[in-house]
Image (cartoon, rainbow, N blue to C red; front, side, top):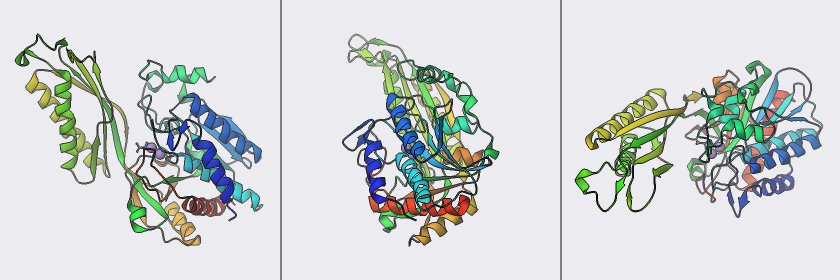
Length: 403
Ligand code: HGY
Ligand code: MN
Ligand code: MN
């Protein structure tokens, strides 16, 4: 496959410049930066003859070929705040490059191919992860459009601002419109780098529970309120955050993270009256996710009761652990072998849009590209050689499915 290394390298630079500063990228869901990314990607696809459109959930699609169930290939175009240049972006760039290589080699499509750039996979702004693919595959949580960011801007308003109706559920497509979904993504962990192997095949994806905990105490004077007369919401939340860490450490293959915390009123001389923090609970299997959620709920209740404070836990989104399609796992193993790589099969601790397609009944496969420097940080790095290998393997897989 004639993947064009220079073209790929140039486009990695162009896309990471949108919302980028140095090696850091901030391209939040439904932000102006994300729209500029859609315009850039749509332009590349249109230039190769694709029919390009944006759907009511602000996903961007480029379709090649005629009618009938398509091979969908892509990833997400948004990032976390101060994230890296490759999470999501590399999957979209390699999808564009893989199709470009097939077109350059005059490989005709016996079935249509659609390249997709998913909107707001991270959920960093509105709290709903896998938002764009959730809309397409009918898996959005109830009331998603009314979910607001920290400034009180709702998803509906943000969609209307870019000219959409404001109802993302109208983006839903029938699973039968797709014969398969393929996603290339950086591994975001150390296993491929430690093994010295450039590609991996994803066997399954972790189950995730996202929630918001609100702790209500009593706002009071930091000087005139003696320690035994306080209902300090932040002190209680601090104990709860440590309890999340303890609960996750106690279960095999479980992880628990509190990534966001806010305090009201938030002044140095005021005993905090309210504290809101996020929960991100994950495990390889559903039983463990449920057990972890139970343990965390119990700890929050115990700590609140002991301090005489009230707390609520609101589940924001829940995606079950999902094994990926065996035939597509085998296809990616063969495609990796064809570019000289004996790829290991890896379970993904990171969530991906691929969960939504597989759960909706669209056979789904994922290919990992080695990355270093961790992820969700500016040090995230995929070597160009590895990206080119990934794009070539993706192109071979596409050729077998659609060529
Ligand atoms: O959170 C995740 O696992 C993904 O990066 N959205
Ligand atoms: Mn991510
Ligand atoms: Mn990602």
